Structures are given as structure tokens and as C-alpha cells.
Image 1: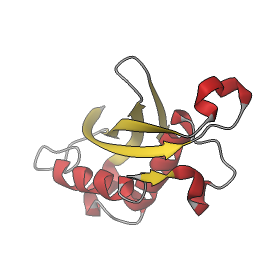
Image 2 (image 1 turned 90 degrees about the vertical axis):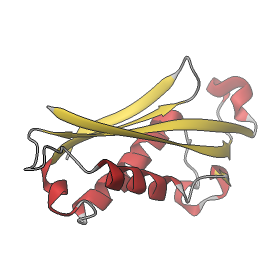
Image 3 (image 1 turned 120 degrees about the vertical axis):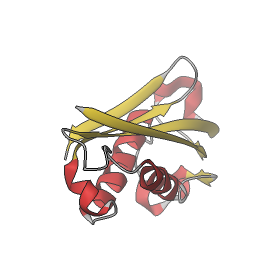
Length: 132
């Protein structure tokens, strides 16, 4: 299996309004380092799994509507607990929808799996990974 992984970041605010989250129940900020890994079983004729430039642009585009936002106020997340794991799946859904819509052109047809990792800090991260 081949993989290309690209990285960006987003700065958000949110609250995790359940007792299990302790002090994170209150409004707080987070800066997530976000990695998107694209897996293929084969390379194209140019020796590429996916175009790194397109992957980088796509990740930036998917993060843009969330960057510097209070997630609690976004219609998309109303009533949801926006944990790291939940956000990883939401970003996975956005990225895979773009792949399925042809965002990578013919190269997107080779992508068989995607993993989205959100690094909360230097000691903690969460991810969502699945086949397409």
C-alpha cells in the first residue's frame, strides 16, 4: 500500500458540554495539527500515489470553513459534541466527498483508503480511517 500524507492546521473554539469532559465543558480554544493520508494500491504512470499539491489544496479548503470558528455556533455541529474523534470523522467525510466528486481527477479513482489525524497536542491525537 502506498500513501501520501499532507499536513495543515486549524484553530477553533468549542465546548464539550458533558460532565465527563471536566474543565473542557467550558468554552476553550484548540489548535489542531491535521494530517490527511491518502492510500493507494498502485502508482500512476508518473510514479505518484496522489498529487501532493492537490492533496494539500484539498485539506486547506476543507479546513478553511472551520478555522477561527466557534464550532458550537456552526449549524453543521449544532447539538453535537465536537471531540477530536468526531472532528476527524467530519473532515474524513468532507475529504472523501471531494474525492468522490472528482477533485483528484482520474488519480482519485486509485485512492482506496483515507486517514484523518487530529493532533490535539504533542502527547495526544485521534483519527478516523476507513476504506472508500
